[in-house]
Each structure stands twice: as C-alpha cells, then as structure tokens.
Length: 266
Image (cartoon, rainbow, N blue to C red; front, side, top):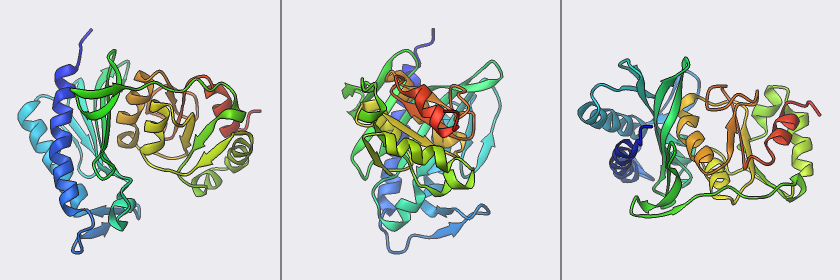
C-alpha cells in the first residue's frame, strides 16, 4: 500500500504558503469581493490562494490533475488534488476567524476519486488537522508537533452533541422535520458551520454533524480526516465518502440514527 507521506508533507508546504497569503489579506479594508453566478462571494484572497497552490503543484507534481473551487479541473490521470482555497468565504470577508484552506489528494478507485490525503488549515484559529490513508488523523502546528485524533465514544443520542451550518438548507430540501426531531433528541446543538464541525467530530468534541448541500472540494479533505480518526463520513444517502452532494459525519456509533432522522425514515 502506498504510504502517501510525501504527499502529506507537500500538502503542509502548500498550506503554509496559502496561510501566508490569506492571513495577509484577512480583515484588509481594501479586500475586493465579487459575487459568483451562484450568488456566493469570492474574494481576491480565494483566487490568489488557489493560484498559489496550483503553481506549486505544477512544479512539484506536474503529472497530477487539480480540481479547485475557483478555477475548475486542470489535467487528467489517476491522481487528482482537490482544493478549496477558503472554505468559509462569508466568514472571511466579514472578519470572522472560522475559515480554512482545504487540500486533498484523491485517487481513482472504482470509477470515483477517493481521498487518500487531507489537510485542513485554519490559520486565524491557529489550528491545523490532517490525515493520510492508513496512517491516522492528527492535529497540531506541524508534522513533528502533532497529537492523534480519535472520535468520541458517545453511543446515545441523548448524550450527543450535534453541529450543523444553518436551518435554511434543510427546509429547502424537505428534510426540516427530521432535522428538528434530531435536535430535540440530542444533548446539545451548535451551528459552527463549514469545515469546523467535521474537525470537531474527528477530535471527539462533537459527535454528529451534517449539511444538506456541499461540493466535492468542501468534503474531500474533511472526509478522510474524519474516517482516519475512526469516524464515519457518508452522504445523506449512506454512500461512503464525499460524493453525494451532501454530508453526514459521526463517531460511527450514532451514524445510522443520524441518517434515519435526516432521511425521516424513523
């Protein structure tokens, strides 16, 4: 089995460069923000960070393809890097520190690209999380200063903490009743949003999280961090991995109940 550790080291180098670029423009009074066709914001920092990552990948891994939120797919082949230069752009442009650069390496496997390396870097929070297939998940300042991540052992909904992004998306997709019933059955709910609840699941401080609509670049890095920490990451349809256009993540012990509620099958 490939160990992917060289790719993981490269992901850290890419993240260091992206962090420097995004932090340099965070809270800048002259930050330029545009609206994309889907009505979501994109800042000059999003574009600059993705361009920086693509440039370094072109030099370090010229044979690999790249998929990024801002500039689409470039290249072909069995290995594809997936990049979200700033996950949480709405927070970024408002000066809220909950945003991150997401970097994943995926490999073709049975007709789909599966994550084999994932890194989530949130420099305004001073946090970074990462994982490589078969090597576990970690958090820390660097590869040499890291602690291993493990999901929680909570096995009852009544004791569980559930994180989500917002109510609106669940209502739009006709899943609000099941969502609200789940919130009534768990111990605690918090709307942290974006990448953060998945990292909390991986580190055991949250037990469940879900979002009704996501893109591959939102999920590729977070999916492998959660699973290498011992948790479950699927679509709301139960399909493992980041391929369903939505996500459900848990410590594994509560995953079936999470899906049952969000699909209103109970």
